[in-house]
Length: 336
Image (cartoon, rainbow, N blue to C red; front, side, top):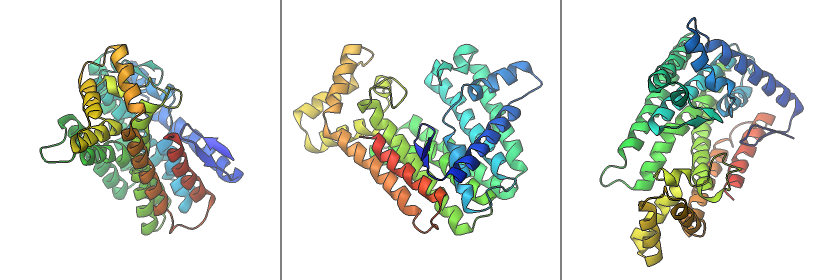
């Protein structure tokens, strides 16, 4: 069994592993080619994150989804390039909004150049993705456009916060489905679509992609609190320090409001305070790590992973299905 990528996608079949690795290599070459420009600065900025590496989870999922049809169909690799270019473009824009200084271990584009270069480079990547997807046919263009709408909607919803009367946890799940789940759903849908899989299979893989995408993000919410940094790849408490309302925090607030325990209210007050102080941040982390709110968030992530696995039940048994099911298990394992 070979484990591919940081998400722990296990590929038990040697033939499948070889095919997927070849596909990923082709995607990588396609990304480099798609980010070239006659303007040297555009090429340098556009390839900045491509050459920094990355999880390439979306292309990997797309290549596995294509195994349920003709995995060698001509549109499979280009569609994987489209999905990854779109993801990269969102990272450029996210770094501007978050004022991030580092991405994938290198200076962010907005830190190395400025916000104008970063936002325009993100737009350039979107345009290149659009050019490629236009060659894949009207159905692919529609899938890409609808996903882009959901991405933007999710980001706006996160910026706005839950409207009056909406449950904050339901709002968070809606944001995660839009910002993260939608593009991973596209990976499942595009892979099967380009491979000529039956419509029912396309829908199943799209649903799987969205659910596993949400599960991963919820697992990351947990890891921001519970991890020592090795698993998540970032400093524990980063989201807390930045005031991001992740699922464990939302579960804590829910418990404090519903049950009113003094200790819970005190921990909420600590979280609402200044967590730029290392001592206060450490105290907040310790409080959350020992709180049942973290266990509730773990259970939420596992539930989405289990639902993702259940969507695959109608598909025929195959090495690709086994790899996708193993991915569900790895998500649950990450939250422990």
